[in-house]
Length: 296
Ligand code: GUN
Image (cartoon, protein in one colour):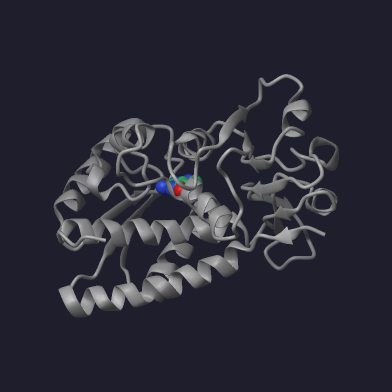
């Protein structure tokens, strides 16, 4: 039976460590990190994500401010708000929840955030820095996956990592991170996507298989080899009348069958999800420390 890579447990441990660090920051330097979270529209998944983020901030002692606007909120107003937040001394991190409504240009909005406050790691400056291995904010989901592997003593160096999915938020940045000539990386990376031919042939070659396709049943037991480590990034809502909310969360991987062959596997929920938020907290603390001139 596969080892369960519990992001929930690791997130709890890391957040306890951060609580201690935050107390020290306050006591020694009078610094309280602050995060602004902006949501436009009323997408239920996005609302639930930002609530989780706010709860996590409050739990560990990060100041958080939520900005919620209706779907018809204008791009110019959003850009003005970001300009103000870029100047605000209480705010060290700015997060604009994606996806944005169609009438707002995502690229323009992400460019407007000061890269020093870009705790999502989505600004092209941070993406560029990551690409060349320079110090930067790492995007939260890929960073959370890397931590989940490292803190479970799973060797990445020299391993064949196969990533399924090429999004700007997960697949592409993760490939670049694991490719770096650095501790916790040095992998041989293959990225599969919707146009990949014979995907099962490639996924079967994986030592570590990371699935961020956004579609249930993307990976079944025939598509993996014995002993593979599987990270399931999927967060799909499927209708379930037996649940109070009317749905349940499932990943992209057929968990029951694949866990019979895998040596380790992350569950959904309780796998990557809590790690993403944990890395957001980490980045916000880093942003506050950098702005106060505090070294790590
Ligand atoms: N939408 C889905 N995942 C994310 C994320 O990590 N950050 C932001 N800002 N939006 C998202």
